[in-house]
Amino acid sequence: MDEEKRLAIANFRYGLIAPIVCRKLEKGEQAALLKDISAKEYIDPDGHIVRPGLRTLERYLQAYRTHGFEGLKPQSRKDNSTPRVIPQHILEKAIELKKELPSRSVEQIIRILELSQIAPPGVLKRTTLGRYLKEISRQIKSEPSSFRRFSYSKRNQCWQGDTHATLYLPHPTESGRKKAVRLVAFIDDFSRYITHAEYYWDEKLPRLEDCLKKAILRCGVPEKLYVDNGSVYRASHLARICGELGIHLVHSRPYKPQGRGKIEGFFRYLDRSFRPEAQALVEQGKLITLDDLNNFFWAWLDLAYQKKKHSSTSVKPVNRFNNCTHPIRKVDIAVLNEIFLWQEQRIVDKACCFSLEGNTYEVEPILAGKKVTLKFDPYDLSVIQVWFEGKRYLDAKPLDLSKPRHPKVPLDQLTEVPPSSGLNYLELLKKSYDEELAKTLGGLTYANLSVGELKHTAGEAQ
Image (tube, rainbow, N blue to C red; front, side):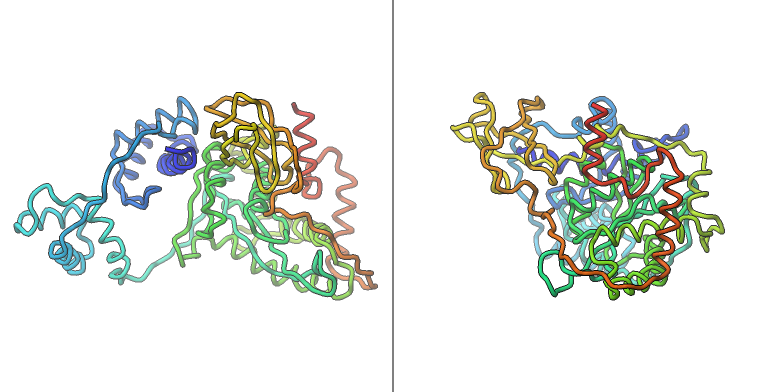
């Protein structure tokens, strides 16, 4: 079993026990959670429907608490199992029973088929039949969904995250054209406080991770991260990061965005208050770069949202977040940077070299012919950590560094456009925001959370 498959299995196992390990439980609460988790069906990395037993979940918990995220990775072994096939006449009868009464469980249907002698005892397996009936269950659900207003009772119990397209800026590399920018944001469910939000040229995984890292640096580690089903949120990198930080990563049901109502509400307010003013600055030529946009946005966010009474709580988000007594779990910046490193696997050739994103690197001779794990920052491919069987070796030596950054985070060249005159609401907010910052000594603000400064801080910590 290769490392990629072992990582996928570890992510799946962590997802099962995350509601237990990511927060402090009251007496007796763990047993209730284990029972609830074991009563549900899940899709494993192989696409099979499984229902983990209590003993299995307890084994995962023990492994995680003893060895951390690495303890959830299985030992490599050969799997010679073959998929089971259900005879057509039995399958048709099972589907008929499910449609007749949708509340029937898979076990109940199997029992009915066996008692009626349609299927021989012991032939039908719950996971196999459940896989066939899964799509049928989706089709026959006819009861309308009902939703109720819900909010967590403490800060950092749950963050909602999403991306939003709002504006077009002058294209960073093609003069005369415009390009859409994407806002990545995380909101604390309890306080409605924006733990961090930032505009990027795209919504790819490095941008999402960059925003999440800054949010954690500012506000601590959340117990749960609630996001949608987009491919960027399903990435194994994000799942591993959440696993190592003890975050329960939860995805909303497809086509059911109602659970992310708080972040959607923030986006609606942003479109009413910030977007028109920012668009006016773009047309006046005063807002032409991504840095300009983020500086105006952070001023608006701090003064026009964080310090404004929220319509649902009647409390300023910043006050509701800061006045909560629930402890904040902090992570050292150096540790955080290590966790957020990307991981890839490569086979070292006989010349002790390997390639990564078009670059060529050299490693120690002892690793020739070995399949190694590489850990790196996608923003800086000049430093590549080399790991083999859990041991770190000397960093790879760049021989040909034609691409200093990962292709998913290209270096944007900004177009020079002469600004024109004019004032608006955002400029006034920005001026007031700058004056407040000038009075604050040692405060960690949105503007100084660049990737470069994060690395600088990490270097000082080490």
